[in-house]
Image (spheres, rainbow, N blue to C red):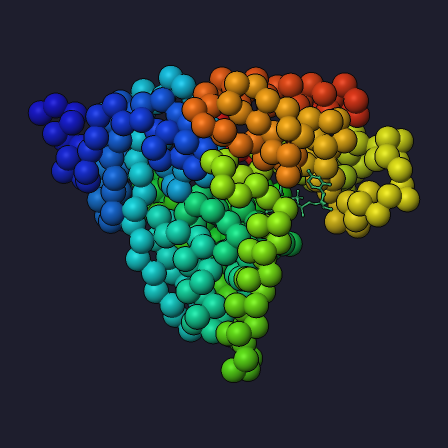
Length: 327
Ligand code: EPU
């Protein structure tokens, strides 16, 4: 049986599917095979089949926080559309393909608190766990109890601790494991006004994002990680903030307080907001976003990213690190 037919037993298959159709950046060449899977059991069977035959694959969540090359992907792209959700007391058990924003809304409706910030996170919950996504001070690591994953032919459970979460980091960025299902541990809202309070928090977050981040253009979230002022073990980072910046500037004080320098602010300092390569532009609104003005290529974006990194390094000696996944 040919691969197309074999894949058809696990989900809907398309050939030479342009990935630009499936990324929030609207950029990316074709995938040889593109399969949409809507049940965890089918996904596990598919992964076992692909691993068994040594066929390369790539897991696509919501298509945010990633840049797919113009050459596309040689192999099988798996779009995760498993979306079952169960609320169990103060826990939510969600399939990896659930839309994070929807899940955050559901958590508020179920009278739970702790995940309101999820309304500001594009993509799927599986993708959010992988990147330890966050907004407004919240991070996935604060709400994940455990994760069910497929790893080397087996389905296993990892505790929060075993996910090795760090700032926009997790074990999933470094080892091949596919996230299947996520259990979030939240808190019951104490009083009846809780739901309204949760909605208010969520609304404030959306308003903040609308005000500070580009709207209406295709983009892929923040391109770079913010720059941590202390290393993983508390040692001072290579960034010596005080040497470079005005310590009395309220923004600098804010960065010292949170322990990270906003990468967007650094991009602004080197005058690169509004810089363009082809149809890719550094957002004039927020320096850590690149927007697709229409028909931008991955090469345009990569060139712009390199220019930004060069400028920031030349001026401050800081090596910006990409937060997005580059395929
Ligand atoms: N700032 C500037 N110029 C800019 C961008 C930011 O001066 O071009 C200043 C802002 O005025 C503010 C400070 O820098 O004083 C921080 O900016 P902001 O609140 O926008 O937050 P951020 O650190 O740039 C982070 C996350 C975002 C998240 C927002 C809001 C990272 C890399 N970014 O951005 O997450 O939405 O906080 O919570 O951690 C993402 O991860 O993809 C992402 C967009």
